[in-house]
Image (cartoon, rainbow over all chains, first blue to last red; front, top):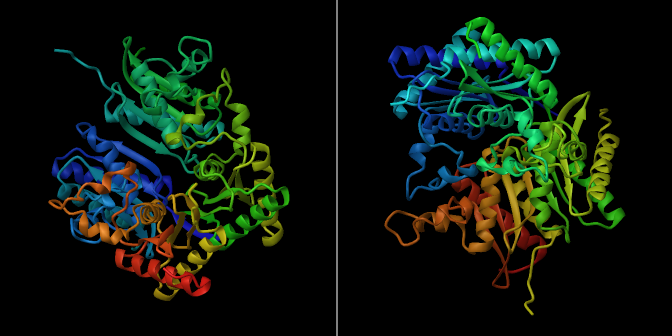
Length: 144
Length: 144
Length: 144
Length: 144
């Protein structure tokens, strides 16, 4: 039997709170999703003003961060015509996101969940996702 | 120009909180979704122990409650072979839910959002959805 | 952090082996899928003669057994027009199976995976799925 | 009447075994799928640690190898904007893979199945797929 570590609901809420703080700081209302390590949604939050088109994008980013175990911005640079990974953006029923703003959440070197942020530019989305993970580490004391 | 009344993020959180309270009271960890009046997700919460299969069901119930403007349990009884509404469960790309636990959220006779609850029996899901709406009225003072 | 128990690849192979033995005994070549507790495929086997249409059905049955935590034959009886659960068969993107032959695999009262069998009648499929789980218990010594 | 040559279940298992051996050798736990010559799944194996996002990618690679009758890495280089094959990656309902790691399995110049490997880089995936086919030839004595 495998022993798996997974984000709890309470820990997912800390990630959402971290995302919200950074969103308010930079003045971009975001959609933020947190999934478990298997890519299944735990919590989602669309701030007032968050984009409707970003609902599914945020969820897909969190899914990808969790199950592909890399930041979606990393895949963005790998998924370029002529490179070996080109084409990955249409896999998994269209849910594999290659737009920055999705990150795996790791604890002790193991992926325990994913976070996805959307509504700003992909750079803004990534900044907020990173801030959310930093806030999570600060609050929980859990290391990468 | 139309003036639309829509649940705010803060009001959606009150609905989730109301659902969580009732879920804990009856001992069934739930997935709960809150959408705006257009059926678009505002917030989602899967409690520890909520079913993975209920993630999309809760979201679909909230969508249906908001945009079809009836409780999904009402459609459950209308959507029976031989009745005029039979077939509605496969519309909207499969997102029209006819399983109890989805409700419109109305204020002053107008739909301002939807709530969907899933993981228990459809009766339990409805009880939690109704409790969430009751809690929302109590906390906000907003009447049907 | 939640601590999750999950079927290993080796344990999934025992379930497939158990399904194969029963399939040979009753003379019906089967498609059998084993998923983890989150509904994600671990192993799949289509015996020579297994039906092509049963590939996705077996996978959907295993998914449903794992994440909805009930046998798919149980949902078959709940998902009847006029009953509260009618409509569940079209949820989860059409992957929620209500055809007998899907079972959760539990250890110590907790779902650790799912098994789905398809190609025979739903009764035959269920017999094979149950035999697979029994074989798994016999070989691993793990109780329900 | 056409006489079709098709991988048996036993031969599919040899391909999976070959993939597993190479995966262990290079230290990358893989998802591996084997399809018949029509692109329909015969066997699938996700090793402990294989990526969830690679389940469907491996299956799509095997499908593509079998039915498009070329390695998916070949299509990767053909499917570049401005080249005549660009666009093929979104055909077949999104199941046409252009990421290396999918190969046709031929016997006597005829495609009898496909293999798809995913979880590593596309180069690693291809190395494992090629090793699996080599192992298959070694074990069965069947020439290309």
